[in-house]
Image 1: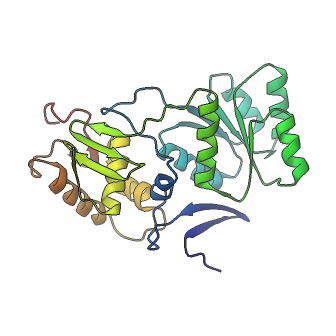
Image 2: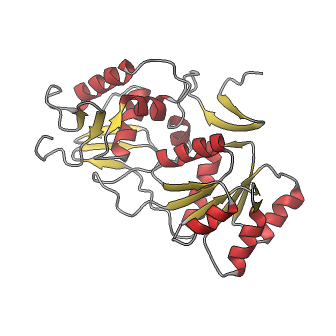
Image 3: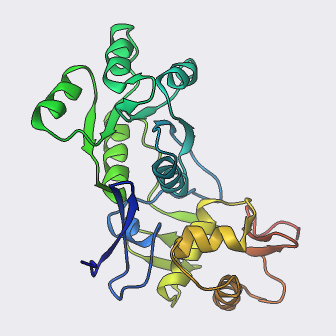
Length: 281
């Protein structure tokens, strides 16, 4: 049965579920997360604290790719691997959180969790697994996991649980709003303002602006912006991005023909400036 408010991505029996707008238009990976207050944004064009470093240990490549993309869209610094051996190598460096599958090709994630705790490593661990029996959940928590999420799962719930763990451990760096010069975007109120005056933005204009402001100074291709803002199931062309950028510039730029905020990167796409008062790139 086709769900009216969510799309399901079938990964060999695993469903990673992401949100859609009330009108049915695809909003993955941004708008459903915004409704749950799950956004991360830089302040004053830069990040006030380092974003949390997350190690994702998942052997299913497609699941790993989708979760990596979702976490990256939140601004987390994500490292991925698909085995116990590679996880041990990665854990030789510091991470703020470990997202751990249990059924790995060269061992059991529970054994890794147990050995980390026995060695005195306190890195927070969120188990992400298809093992959903009560005794499995209790066993995972008993060996040292900080949280336990069963597949299939909602992507926004995964991010919310990660944010909750980071808050408890003092690692959550997420500010409440993104600012760049006189431009401010607040994901909780879904309000964008220029010099304190509200901007009348359509939903996708708001989401595109929010995404760009979360990554100041970084160039994004049109294809990347389509994937991150409109979602992987959107079947429109890259001209969609150009049209939305044009409309945004009319609303936020003093001179849309000579933009200071959303700048064109020739041969690539667009980037949000870090300093709208600085010289043109």
